[in-house]
Length: 338
Image 1 (cartoon, rainbow, N blue to C red):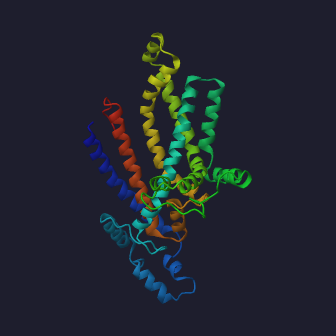
Image 2 (tube, rainbow, N blue to C red):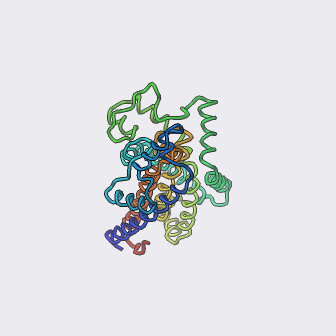
Image 3 (cartoon, rainbow, N blue to C red):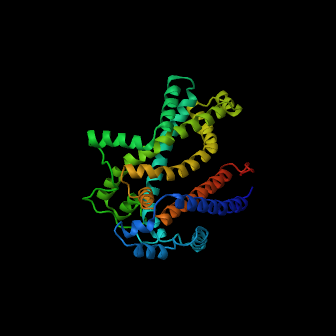
């Protein structure tokens, strides 16, 4: 299947995802008990003020009409106006999303850097003590709640050892780097601000480790399974019979082929990390989309919640599209991509 066909099919799927997600999110948001107009006006506001706010936000219209207005605005790239902040949701997302992406990328790199070597060692020394240890780590990572792990590492590394900060994105006494990309580490490097870079990196470590630990197990299990399949192939036995060292066969031949089916897992992990960042950001007071959407949920801010869901769904589909294209680039023999 050509690149154009893959893109065409994924874009069609993207349209269905947006329609489905917008409809489901809209319905769930309006099923939550509470009155956003009353929250905005305050408990002591008169009924006339509350009614005026409700009319201004079109909350007095039938649900089907509210949804029709939302879809019409969405088709024009308008995610609506946040009830809580009074700013366009697209502007809020633009401001908060870089922090989330920075955290997610760091967590994914940690999962890859730790999970791949663990998976390789587990496959090479199958049924040995290190294999049992890796599988234990994998199961522990998959079954550990992120919020509990976050509180634990804060207690340990911040509360007891005082090695790392327990929250925030940069020290209060350090000025953030000039806004260029929105990623503090990148912006600090571009500005040549070593103090801001060091502070941002120290604040990033604990939330990235917490968010990435769950996917260390996922990556390790996938690499182990793929490596076991490759180590049983004829070309591996032929390479060993030809005099190549075990290390060269494993790293130079088996591992590259094992990484191809693992691309899917890494792509799905990126999408899962976007959603998983909500709890992690809340625990670590990380000023990203997770904190933003939690505050929006508590304020019954329907446009902000729906805007977050739509954007993350978009990102999830585009990540899957990228995975498919990488598949084709790595192995042109692949012709059936769903």
